[in-house]
Image 1 (cartoon, rainbow, N blue to C red):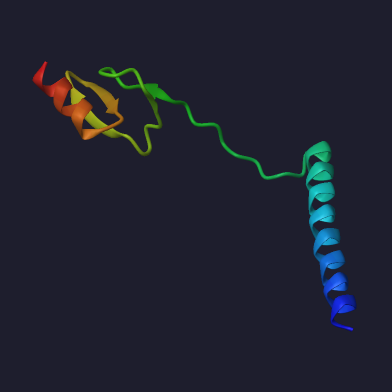
Image 2 (cartoon, rainbow, N blue to C red; image 1 turned 90 degrees about the vertical axis):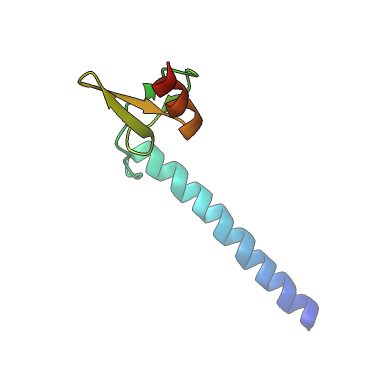
Length: 80
């Protein structure tokens, strides 16, 4: 009896996972999936890493804003 119950639960879990995959594929084909706004990345002038301006450390110097991946890069830029 317990074996049948466990097999039934396993079948339900597998069926749900399969349906979620199929539903995701269909959403992608139809274009119904979530839309994300692209973010323009900027290059850290010290190490060259690309960072998002919304989350990066910044420094305004000479009327221009520079973005950095870390406090270490920002400190190196200030010292130069």
